[in-house]
Length: 94
Image 1 (tube, rainbow, N blue to C red):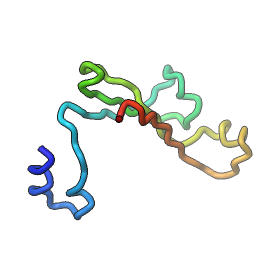
Image 2 (tube, helix red, strand yellow; image 1 turned 30 degrees about the vertical axis):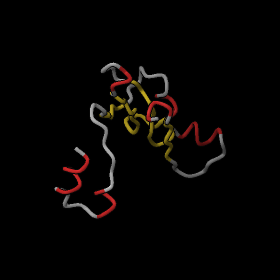
Image 3 (tube, one colour; image 1 turned 180 degrees about the vertical axis):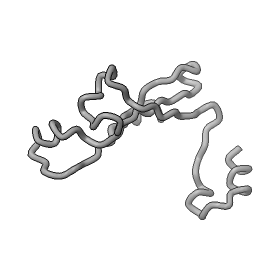
Image 4 (cartoon, rainbow, N blue to C red; image 1 turned 120 degrees about the horizontal axis):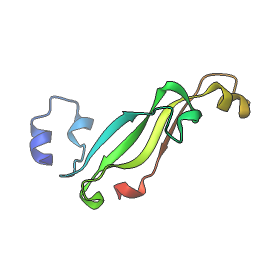
């Protein structure tokens, strides 16, 4: 699949070298108020990254979150301007 993807790519050179693994895919899901990390992020401006791979047995495993930080979090750390955050666990990708 990697060779076929690279030879059929109309993207730049950097995209031709992207590595894909068969059976691996990711899903991005918006965080809701019920999620544990929802209070960290501005409502409606955050998501989680779910990974499906052969090692997870087809189950979706949460490997990270990203979004715009909530104003209360910013003030707790004396940050006076909007900021975004990305948290990712690389171990499942190894």
